[in-house]
Image (tube, rainbow, N blue to C red; front, side, top):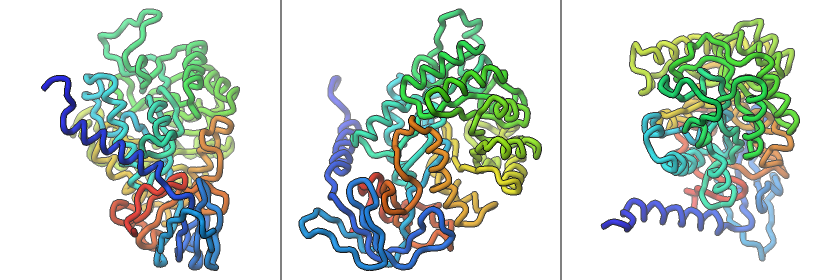
Length: 447
């Protein structure tokens, strides 16, 4: 019957209401008894300890029993010696484009894509990912809903629209949309997925628009991409002056610019312009790595190894570009380790539900190059340092990525020791028994 919601809609709204109630109906304190702690920084676990969370923060950590005021509303989690660790941080997410297909996004009502991001955010939190730096897309409303406690999801550091030159990696138009007249706005721009800007003045405007919307950092496309149709992987995008305009606009707001770039030339241009975070970088050389160290530039790396992707059939241009990038992953990571580049980890899932579900598996893949403690540090305390670069635009001031007194209480209780077996994190549904974000319990199988 028209005008009446279907069963799926009623169930979905009921689930949202229930989850909202769970988020709000929380005790004022949570006591973890008998845990071994991976604190996000050390290379070994602590002695058996107790951790008290009061409100949003870790209040006390002690090897002696912790007593709590008898009148307080306290949840006691008897951990039985299991491992307590910080929530995971993904430094390169796209929540507005994670599991939806590119065709569905292009042909659906604009609200559909935004609504699809709600369960994706919930799923991400249930994988133990409590914070993400969103590298492009319209997630400002989603972030607000999560921050208000209306839906569960990770903390979000939003970049806003992907800023791209004409024919750049963030230009989602077709040839039928050309030539562009002054004032023309493509649907991808209208709904906050991209912002096409050519010349310093346009770059300044588009950067300032994202800052006005609440961006914590700015994302610029500085080189060719795998998934884009019109730009070969080897092309550099934006002049040094255009990138510098974005950097100056971001710096005026106390934050920084991150750029998509694979090649040495694109990365060097970005560094000369003052960019502080390079996303990907699989095709750079040793000279460029040394330049990154000299200028204290981060490399946000993804373990791209050429895994099959439903978007790129075998033999297609996209698949050939994907394999070209994959060939450089090993060398770039080895060079970065050798020279001491500041490395962050992120997954960069776009339009791929299968890869989204394997988010923490992609973290475990990093053990190909790093020890388990290095992998976990990268996804906790190290990534937290990158998030803090947003300075006054940081939407969640406070310590993250660590288990320390006074830190924000984003915590996971693991059934096993991930320092001994990093593959535990690849199955978060089974092995993360308790998931806490901001002092609120979102999962507890030890009740």
